[in-house]
Amino acid sequence: PKVVEKLPQLKELPPKWKYVFVGGDSKKPIVISSLLTPLEEEELLKEAETVNDVLGWDLNGVIPIYCLHTP
Image (tube, rainbow, N blue to C red; front, top):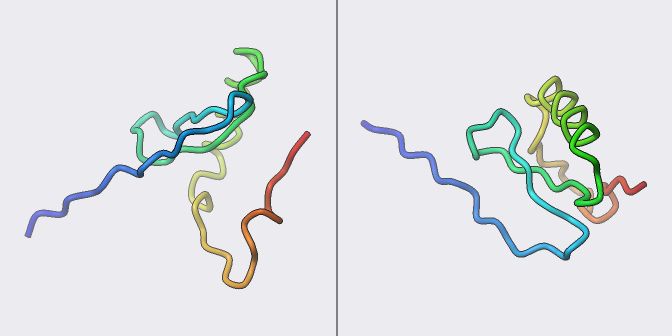
């Protein structure tokens, strides 16, 4: 059987946030600040790719809003 992977549905974000994709395959979006410089964004993506395996884990019992990391 052929496995069909669905791309994630992206919601509209407030102006200060934007989506970037880990791995460049458009399958693992993360939300970052739109105020980052291109260099900061590149460094953040490099770091995100090192922890790519744990991105997207479900934390049972943890309300997602409490997991946000803001500057």
